[in-house]
Length: 117
Length: 376
Image: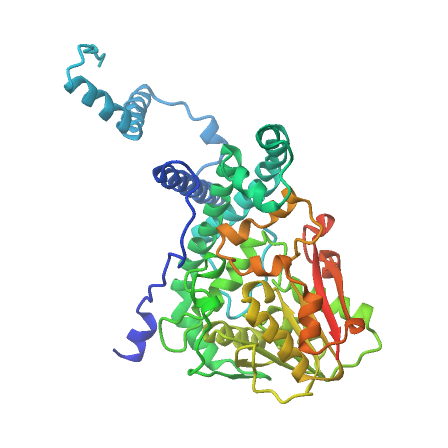
């Protein structure tokens, strides 16, 4: 490896602390879920900050003003697209609930729910 | 957070890394101010009545409190979130350090200034440091992953700043400011010529002293090579003259009777009971007759009510600060006497963030550190 290569090769540092982690809840899966939720909370915050930067730079570069966001008149076709995308997003996040429902139905408990589309 | 002062060795976060670090700090502020306080009504309104009903008396010790509070769902959720927040600190910082590491290594090697760095590759890190990663910093103080590594130093510099939510002041040297200002105020007649800081990590405290007193000769020791390399480069970047060396504070190679002052800053709670005695013994050995040791650390449990004492010990059980447990009940007076100091020359004083000269945003909630002082 040349000196340049050595100076640019990324060194991977450890991410996990050595030592036993306490279990906080009755089920260790709950501990993991909480960690995931908090990490997601952080990532959304990071995304919001970045979006804020983007909007301000757009305004600074005179592409459009921030209040045009508030005053944006959503066309009907965009509304429909967003509605479909939203429904798919909600279904994706709540997929675990749907999975359980379908499993219950497969067990044939006699309570076949007539699902609306 | 109030912005952290950036020096040449600082692993400056990019846009998203900075945003993530701010999130972690704000999350910790929220936990401290809006969630943690709920542990009190939880205890008094729910946990305590249940305990009293079952046992006919209130919990007598913090250990009894711990057994029941750790089963309460409110406490569990706060504790789990606090743990997550600590893990998130390091994760948000390591991204920046990984990105900057090759540059930081080069800068550390090239750094020029007064002071020096003496490493000892043969020094074996003690088990109380290698057994578990203290405060969950992956790799802790001693681990290296590449030649001339400084990563753990860079991680510590930004990570501890976020941990304290900016409370250590923009230069991240609040503890050094406390001991220095306290010393100058309480002992103005003393004119030290040679000072040793034990367990200096990245030298935040000792570098502050050195900047205030360019005519004093400063030495600083630590077990960890990466934190010393970083600390040496940081001191040079700030213009502080410090002689850093990789040594175990339990037994150094300094001559006896050679220092006017021996200090340490939150070292004692990260060391074993045996090592603590050795550190006091070593302090005595290297101090000149009439010299003074000044060891700042975390509060002990003497006289603290069981609930408060339990809540304050969260770090022992959840943040790999296992050795803080030995500090909680130990008789430091006795340890100092065993080291050779006379009882009448030993005292424990208290100093908090009011000694930080308006550097911290939290001065109103001044938290006081006990400082063990003894004169040889």
